[in-house]
Amino acid sequence: MKEVIKVQNLSKNFSVRKNFPGILGALRGLFSSETVELAAIKEVSFSIFQGERVAFIGPNGAGKSTTIKMLTGILHPSSGFIEVLGIVPWEKRATLGFKIGTVFGQRTQLWYHLPPSDTFDLLSKIYELKPAIYKRQLHDLVEAFEISHLLYKPVRQLSLGERMRCEIVASLLHNPQILFLDEPTIGLDINAKLKIRSLLNQLSKEHGTTLFLTSHDTADIEQVCERVIVLDKGMIVLDSSLRELKRAYVKKKVLSLTTDQEKLSLELPGLKVLENANYHFVCEVDLSIMPIDKIIHEALTLTSLKDVTIEDPSMEEIIRTLYGTVIND
Amino acid sequence: MIKAEKYITVFRFAFIHTLRNTKSLVGLSIFLITCLIIFSNLWKVVAARIGGVNLEPDQLLWYIAFNEWVLIALPDMQLNIEEDLRSGRLAYLLPRPISYIWSIFMEGFGELCARLIVLGVVTFIFTWIRAENFPFGPGPFAISIAIGLLAGCIGVIFKMLVGVSAFWVQQVEPFHWMWEKLLFTLGGLMLPLIVYPEWLQKVAHLTPFPAILGDRSALAMDFTWINVITLVGNLFFWGILGTCSLLLLYRRGLRIVNIEGG
Image 1 (cartoon, chains in turn yellow, brown):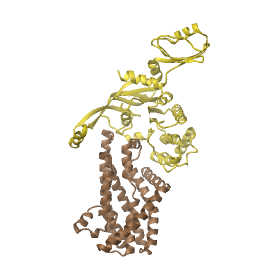
Image 2 (cartoon, helix red, strand yellow):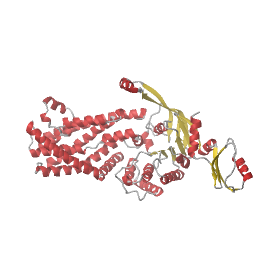
Image 3 (tube, chains in turn green, purple):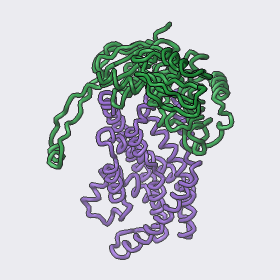
Image 4 (tube, chains in turn red, cyan):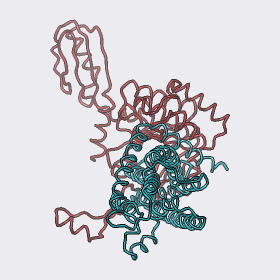
């Protein structure tokens, strides 16, 4: 598989003006030019291959935006090497611009008083698309994203979800090989979120577009990505597949039993009862203390089971566990 | 050719975008008419008390009309640049294969043209009715309009210069406040330049402000080819100087973004 992003020993330091506390400190700051050196990214290395859907996550201030800015050529690194689609981003930003797309959830490139079709026309000129290619690409995207009824409506009249679908279409018109997404579902309702996620999956599967996603919404990660890179304090603390992440960090499961008894008297170590009424017994199981099969076996000695459900904890729970263990270690 | 087409398209959409924002155009027109009424009365008092305003009452109205027409049509491009920088939208726009600064200029130029047309109709009809005469031949009037457009362009460039100061100061409002107050005073909007001390008039003519406002409006009243050539030469000088300064500052500002991330 083709390597589309190659990052080696990437570091970025910022010189930040020193702030002094209090009123006297503020006055001192007016005359002081003291700066402190902050390391935003420290010796980061990773590779991303064509068609991969990668979540790039981490707590606030971890260095995600800084990395994205370096990958898109806006920010020059202090040291290290980046190649995106065979191009060094900060050396040939405009050339790279033809090959990548960006979707930033809280920013817009649509003209507020004009219909999206006008912005699309403008972008076709900016990306120097041949009219026939633009027409075909627009047609395909309009079909896929179901925005034909929105094309000629002024952007100010669109809902946030409709606008976001149009934003993504705008970013895909030039058929980018890599799409950088920063909080693409922020502020959207649940249906709009589901729609955007399913469209991103479809896009990646059908066109082989590489997705590089940053989001605090764990459902975005779970439903779109297959690989997770976790950044903290400028360093990669985890780089694994989503399946591997779940396997390594799912230490608890939720077990639901439908029984013959109205209440079940089951008390075992590592078991936290969440619900025990109306023939339903729900508990959280700490797998490191108690295996699931043993609980089921114990339950069967007390009653007969009509239904058994074992659930993984939510992605949010996994990420919280991850942040609590890997990042604090 | 392809590159020029990008910028022409930006201009075209900015023009249409401004025309579609009818509420803003109505608001600007009301503000313009209010300014015309206030300034025409203010200047009448100035002319009566201080003297030195060598214009007939109807000419005075037309002078103020030409001033206000361009002034109010100037789009606030400095705010767009400031907003792009502060919100981080610049990071979104920079990777696109189009120059950010030139696309902002074409956006401003498109907005300016649309506003000049709409506000021009409002200004000139209102002033014609109020002054009860139209003291221009078609040639001088057309040339005055074209020079108004040129002066507006220079205004956009200087407002963008104020805007790129955001690379260093984040908030451009203090600089914009200074630009506006200097334009109002040294441009001959608040008071006619002729009532100022001679040394201040000389200082004013070392700045672009009279060419953008007062001198340009005075040309419409006192149309001679030598005045036209002098004024156009003056405007081109300030236009070239402003553009060079803008590009220089923008490149330096961009270097800050490249190194410090904005």
